[in-house]
Image 1 (cartoon, rainbow, N blue to C red):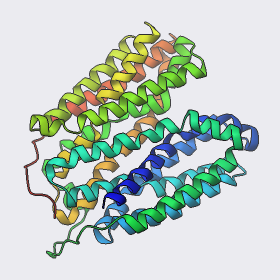
Image 2: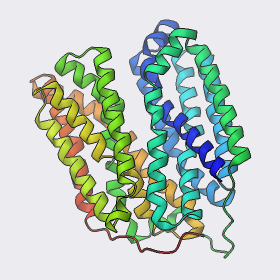
Image 3: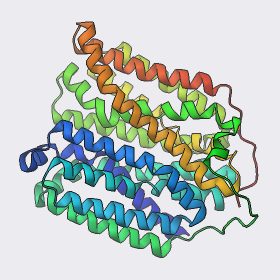
Image 4: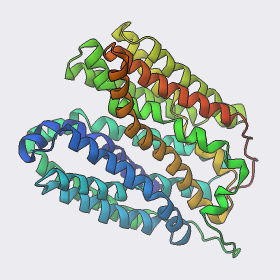
Amino acid sequence: MRSGLIMLCLAYVLSQFFRAFLAVLGAPLEADIGADASDLAFASGLWFLTFAAMQLPVGWALDRIGPRRTASALLLLGGGGGALLFAVAASALHVSLAMAFIGIGCAPILMASCYIFARQFPVAQFATLAAVMLGVGSVGNLVASYPMALAVEAVGWRATMVGLAVLLALVALGLAVWVHDPEPVTDGARGSVLDLLRMRALWPIFPLMFVAYAPAAAIRWLWIGPYLTDIYGLSTAQVGQASLIMGLAMIVGTLLYGPLDRLFGTQKWVCLVGGLLTGAATLALAGTVGQGVGLAIALCALVGLFGATFPVMIAHARGFFPAHLAGRGVTLMNLFGIGGVGVMQFGSAPLHSAALAVSGQGDAAAYTALFGFFGAAVLIGALIYLFSRDAPSARPLS
């Protein structure tokens, strides 16, 4: 099982990598096949949409056929196949289709790990194990920047994508060999995701799950560059350094949150305080636009640090899942989490444009409105979450 978890961790590094690697391919893709920034934004959005759409079928597959076959098959066919399609892309359409396939391939990786944690490890260890997986996997975000740029410069983007396709295939093979499925549930219980949606204990958790990660993800993956360039005139290299600082803060936050539920004996209050701090940091960012680049980067880092409650949020909901719905439970929560990121990323661009047009006060007012929207959404989610209750300290799901 240890070897299987190591392979899942490596696969998750690749999953995180493919969320961010397009940022360094803009110039060569536009020069070679005419794919401009809007085309790449659409392709990136497709990655998130297909990733989110796959969560419910992935949950069914985890419960019915197990994580080994689910993760290995989808990573090989979707991830490896999508990377190969990307390598031979001749238009922006091909890039978009490739990103959709890669999103399908990456969809089961984290949830396969969470399913194993939920089924084979003590309840109290779930948040810590999920946080370690998220924290280590987030290294992929860092690799997607400067190292990816070096590879593209050295051998070109097509050869780089062929290499990534081979790596994905090898990791998929490793998953098939070393991941072991938990023992199947044999009590004859049946159910579906609708049974989870009927559980009132989960209702106050869903809204905060939907918005808690969105400010950190949207700023890190989409808005930190335009914000620091438009308002403070930073160069590409300086934006890269600021992005690296925020990315590291997100990793540190993930690892710090992991054991807090055991330290304080509560998941609800860890997530609630985290949500309040995330909302406060995001509103502070909105209220200090133009007041200093150092302050701006520090607040972006705090948004990333405080907004890393993802593993504890899943752990909170996981305590209410019956064993036979463990796979569908963790993927349902991931659907809310990643779906929230995708929806708010798609909605943020029109909001920024509308604020820019209506205010008549330039970029500063537009970014104030944008960050204010993110902060207010998290605080509203935290207010609803206040009515949740801590999960029972039940036996492991087995």
